[in-house]
Image 1: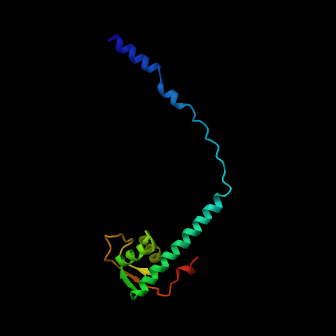
Image 2: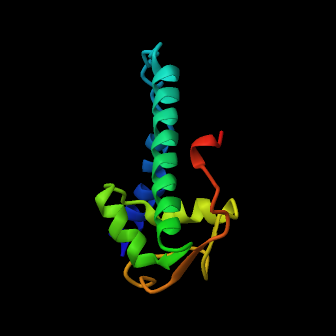
Image 3: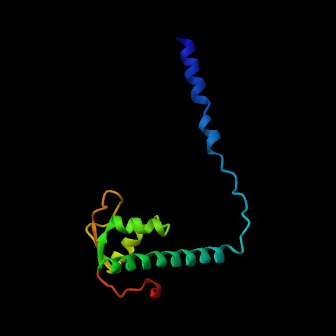
Length: 129
């Protein structure tokens, strides 16, 4: 009985959490990269141009198919263009009211038979800002 009481008193007097309350060490100094802004701007500009090129072949493919085709056709053409973002490109074009399809986002193969319709056959994504 007495050994339990003395153990409890020792635990009460020794507070291990006090060791955890010391302030964290200061962060290591970082070396600024003078080219960071230009590199990210260049990368963003390249990504935007890449996106426009993908949108262009999507619109051209729809034109070639009398302004509508299945999502599967666009995915197959996308593979030839090494595009793994067909769904995202379609969402952008739908938001711009260039195309339409049921739902918010098409996923392959679940929506492969979904019809994508071109609403603006004269649309040129290369003229977008």
